[in-house]
Image (tube, rainbow, N blue to C red):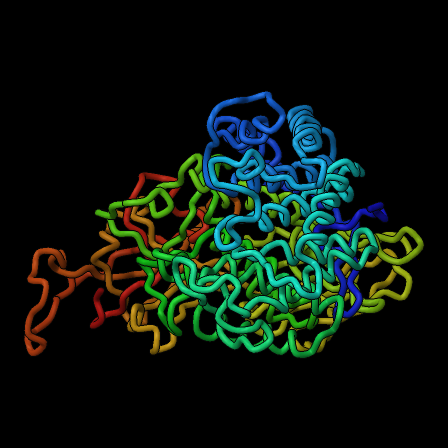
Length: 636
């Protein structure tokens, strides 16, 4: 395979989308550039060190004779190497970094040397031990899942670094898979979807339709029963019915969301209406019945899976960080398919809450699951259910997934629809426009506030500007062009204006604190309220409060106040008045007659400090935390 090299991001030009991703955006100093810098200087080097420590790289070195010890980690340990490679490739596209360059070159050379002559490459199976022969376990073997992440790393290598060595490795493995499983009579597919979206992108990069055809074959076969019941039942693997007939989100959350991202990629290339309709049904089911307020997904720990409709318990929320990242991938592709702003509202909610909660302020510790409530006596029986961020995990899927997403953040900011530049998400960035070297620079303190300034330099051509008006913005945005107030109309969530050479466009999206309640069908939080400001969900963290957050109740007329103190330069702290239960709930009986007086509250209001959910847990381990705050008369 040869590549048409261009400076695109993880998604290149598509054939049938309503809008297209924009190549060439650059982050400028600010909140998002700080996230990327932390990723580059702390998180990725930390991850590389952990890949050495945990044995992922030694697994591959067994194949070249450089290491003769036992296999370490889960079967899919190679995928964490590939995700890290992808992150490194995007970072090297920004500029050289000696440690990252050494890891990239050394690991690519290792993979070239480790690959079998027939193209197969998987350290868990290549030596025939400890897991048996290749292709002996499609249910949990993850071979195609690993291939998907290698392909995505190879694409980043071409687009970020201009290096095709990894593309050669990936291409040979794809050819191996195509020869074995790509025929009309073949029935195989992976128990863990992910390879589908990677294969479609490989076709976009190379112009070879073969990988996309293989991806479509895997999608069309799913639901035939090839995977079957496995350990957790056919639903867990999204193998209970054909994709085209699916109406609800079910099973393992990461698998389901990666599958739908791959299906959306197929829709972007083929325009298939039946597949698009299936995605839209599932999207409506997700946002209407099965998504946590933070954008988290998956309410069941046993199988990391979606639960029943409205089954969204705060303290048992699994809400895996990888599932949040997968939802960002799917939401972005649904936006490219439809051009709809509401898909981006979900992406934004997910990114700024469950995804960013997955990594510590320092950048070297992580959450696997992301509950919306933690009790002070929480006991974590498994590392992924802990109340404190950990430096790494035995199943370390989340940390390198965070690395690769953060390394490519600028590619989520802009899109194009004809000659219109769409501002999909907000951050300090510059993007090229027109054919005459023009640029648009976006300046903002977002998510601290909602003011956006767009500066047009050079000739923008005939380009117009469309700015997403998010669901959290209060009232009609105030717009000025070169200091003059401008009357705007908003259509389908977009504010539109013309781009004029050397102009300055100011857009103020009013960002106010707001309180929310859940649908009454969400029994777990009925009678409770949650607080937001802009896209950020807030929580009560015991580390910020003298009042006992496990004993508080909120009056129906309580008002939220914005404090002067800021958290990590991300957002201000908030405060509202609450009362406490007069006695600790644990002091009373487990059950008591309903006709009694019920729990009493203290007479005086006390201030409760709230912080962005994404920043909780950087203090003491297992300190109590709540997103949903019980109201008076409904203590929990």
